[in-house]
Length: 308
Image (cartoon, rainbow, N blue to C red; front, side, top):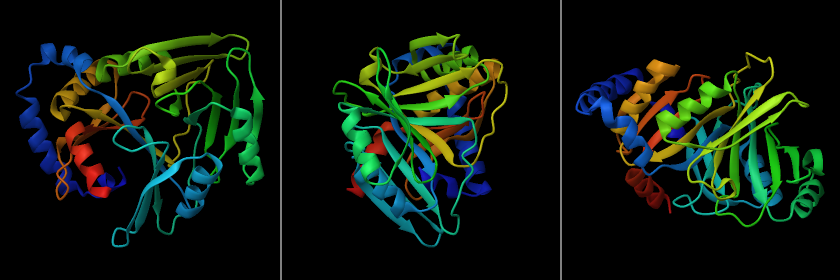
């Protein structure tokens, strides 16, 4: 959530003292087992854009999402909007942040695309093109029909022909240099399951789909992509992070800390309540440098209900 980025070093230090105290009470030998039992849910992805109204128009009119909330923070000099196919308390959504005075961001090569499931890919492509949108790959495929396009800021999105699904925003694709390490990290640190692994020697890449549950078409996933012989990507400053719900940010942070010692990564915001809004979160970067916010489930619901 964009507001989480506004806190100064003193707040981080305050949370560090709280988080360290709480984490010390959690036995390390069973915290990784607890992670598998935790109630996780993908909450939102945070992406920075140069023109918020233009972004809202594209995602609602061209892709069919709904504007769920829009907030202005003139003192902090940023605005944000949340769009999605359903309410925030039950659906994975996109949160766009616009920092006033910044018109363009570097997307880089590490971020891949946003995946969107649709029951009629051809109609969606026609609608996007009719409204002036950019389609970079026409619908095609064997077992799965898919297409690609670019939003007004240049972020790539994939359209995937799919039966009805409770999570139409179905994927966040990230490029990784070490796929096995990335999969292991998300399995151990966040309790995800490897739902699919696919290797294409012809196109020189391997994919790993990790998420919650057991049905790839019924949940949001992180699509981790390894391109043969590519060991480094440019990070950019456009894609910010993904947020995931947890029943206990302190236990979650303890688990992440254990896994980072083995596989890499780092806690960058210790667990604790954010002053003024009292939402408990913790933040970390994975071994590839991608950021994740872990947010207390009950606090998140309270925050969302305040906005409604």
